[in-house]
Length: 635
Picture 1 (cartoon, rainbow, N blue to C red):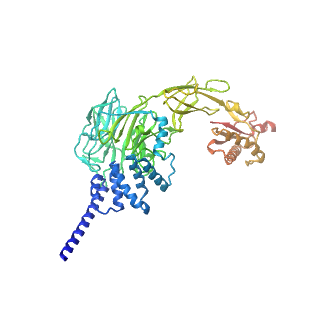
Picture 2: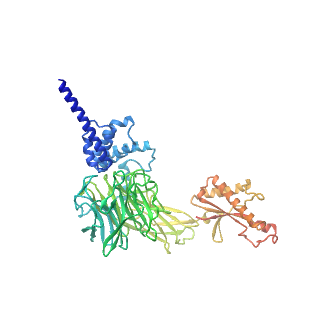
Picture 3: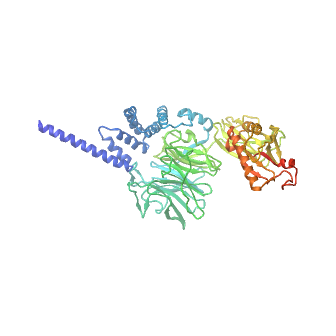
C-alpha cells in the first residue's frame, strides 16, 4: 500500500512539474509571439488561472480566430470580472472578438463597460446595428465590392498602384512558415491591372527585395525610381532580433538600376526597439506616412509621418494626432490625391477587428474619422484601403468570411454619384459672387468637399442618391449662408434650385459701414482718461453694442485698431495705443466674445484721418478726430 501511495505521489508531482514546464514554455513562446504553438500548450494546463485564460484569449485574438478568442475571454470574464481583477484591455478585446462572430449586442455591452472603466466619453452612438443603420442612410451606395481572381488559399493584401501595374504581398509561394500563425512568409509581387481592374500575371520581385522573411506593403514613387516596403529587420541575408529576441518590422528603400530593384537600405528612423511599417506617400511625395508603436504613440500602433527633405533625407517622426490615433491600433495609412487620409483602426467605433476610416483636412488638421460603412467593413479585419479619386476605383484587403484564403484583395468602385450645380448671389443686388467658398457637409455634419466659385459664380459637387446634405457659403464681408437639400433615389435634388443667397453685413446692420473698402462696425467714440487705458463707464456702454453685434454673428471676427493724434512722442503714442486696443479686447472677451474672434493692434499716430501729422499745426478739434478706436471686420 505504501508503495502504491508513493507511486501515486511521484506521478502527481511529476504531472504538476510537467504542467508547470508546459506553461513556462508556453509563456516563452507567447512572449516571442508564437501564438498558435503557445495556445496548444496553454490548452494542456489542467487548472487555468487568470493569466493563462488571458493569454489563451490573446493567442487566438492575435491570429484572428475570434470564435476561440471569444470562448476564452468569456471564461475569463465569467470567472474574474466580479472579482475586479481583469485589466480593461481584455474587456475591449472581448468586445472586438464578439463582433468578430457577429454578436453585436453582447459586444456593445462590454465595450460600454470598457469605456466606463477607462472614463472614455464616446462621440458615437455605441449601438453597432443602429450606428451602421444611420451611417448607411447616406452611404449605402458608396461602393461596390468585388473579390479578385488573383486571390489564393493563402494571403494576398496591401495593393499599391503605379501606372498599369500593381504591387501586393502574398504567401502564394509557400515555403517555411512563420511562428505567429504558422502561415508562409510574405513576398512582394507585381501584377498588371487589366481593363476590369483585375490584377493579372503576377511576377515575384527579385531576391534583392524578397528574402526568407516578410516583405509587404510596397509603394513606388511616381517617377518609378524608388520602392519603399516593409520587411523584418534583415542584414546580410540574416534576420536580426533585439535583446528580447523579437524581430520588428522596418521600412526599407530600394532604387531602380538597369530595370531592376537594387541598393536596398533601411530608413534612418528605424529602430530595433519597435516596428515602423506600412509606408505611404502623400500626393506630392513630400511626406512619408507609416504606422508604428514607437515612443510617443497614443496607443499600441499610431499613424506617423516624416517630411522628405529635398536632399532625400527624412525629418523627425511626427504623430498625426489624437483625432486619428486612439488607445488601440491605427495602421495602413493611405493619402489620396485630395489629401484625404484613409487608414484602418480597431480603436474607433466599427464593425469589429480593423475597420477602414477616412479623414479630410480642414486648415491643415485632420478631422474626426468617418467609418466607410459595413459595405467596405466587416466584423473581421478590413485594411490597406487605397482609392484613385479621379477614377473612383480602388482596392482593400480583408479576412472576411466568404473569401478564398486567409487575407484576400477586393476591388471597390464608387456607385451612383450624380453632379449638382448651384450658384451664390448677393441677396440684395442679385449679383453673382465669384470667390465664394462653398463647403459640402453630409447629414451628420462631416465635411465631404469644398469648392471656391469660379468667375461665373457657379459651383458643382458630386453627391449620392437618397442622401441629405448641407451647403455653406463663406465670403468676406458677408454673413455665412447655409441651405439643406436631399436627393431622391435617382439623384435628383429635392429642391427647386441650389442657390445660396448671401447677405452683406452692411445691409443687415445700420452701424456696419464700408470705409475705404473695409467693413467697419461704427459705434459712438469711446474715450480714455489722459495717459490711461482703463475702460470707462461711458466707453463700456458703447462697447456693449459691439458685444451684441459679435454675439449676433458668431462667425464674425474683428480687428480693434487704436489710434492717437500726433501730439507727444511717437514711441509713447504707439505704446499707449497698443495698451488701449488690448484693453478693449479684454473687455470684449470678458463679456463672452471668443478670444479667437478678436485681434487688437495699436497704430499710434501712423494713420491720421487728416493732415494733422505734426504737433502745433491744427486745432484741438482737428487733433481729436485722429484719436479713435476702429473696429474692422476681418473674417
